[in-house]
Image (cartoon, rainbow, N blue to C red; front, side, top):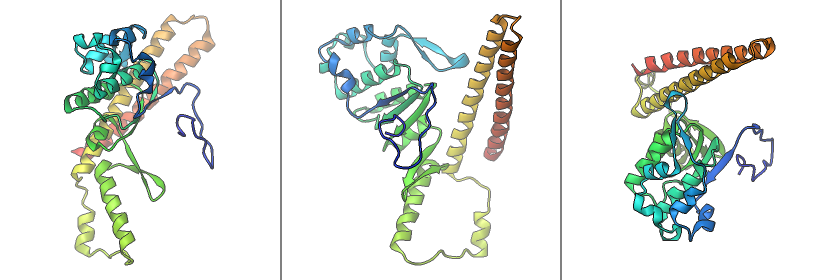
Length: 275
């Protein structure tokens, strides 16, 4: 609601970027209503001819039919009317229509409903290489951990970041429930407990969280490097007599190089923490 602009905040304000394009995969499939009597091939023939998956050096051009195949559609199913598709197939076709609208922010509301294990894996692969921002609401912890870099939860009326992922959510929820059920205070730690808690060894959940953060930093570095390549190409093609324009492009390159340097520092810190 707040992200899409359908709901206004009761307090404060929401600032949205001018270039932000939000799309939502809801639990309904209303996007398909007008296509119910049409074969799948007719539906995709009305869509744009290509779709770019990934970014930078990993970018890949795909047709709608290729995307459908990646989502588990066989060639024979292209002749099937939309109304005769299974719930999972309609769900995947709905996702395709949304992806081809080229949003840069995609909200997924329980996207794993009606999907079997193989199709869930196919959707994970597709979304994992999607270049935009994903906001996912799901009860499927493994899906969340596969396609997202950070997890959040609403705890006691506040949105909390969970560096430890779903394991941290379960632990915090248990602590809250225990604290609510008990009127006792915090137990003092013994010296041995304090020493144990000071050990830097990562738990399994913390290690997975650090690995996901490391992967996120690597993706950001790849994206920034691709943007530098693009800016350098723009500078080469730019009117060389336009000193002001070249200067602006040069500043953008410098900013991206600074960003990469900062990301490299983050990468080193995360790598050392995993050693």
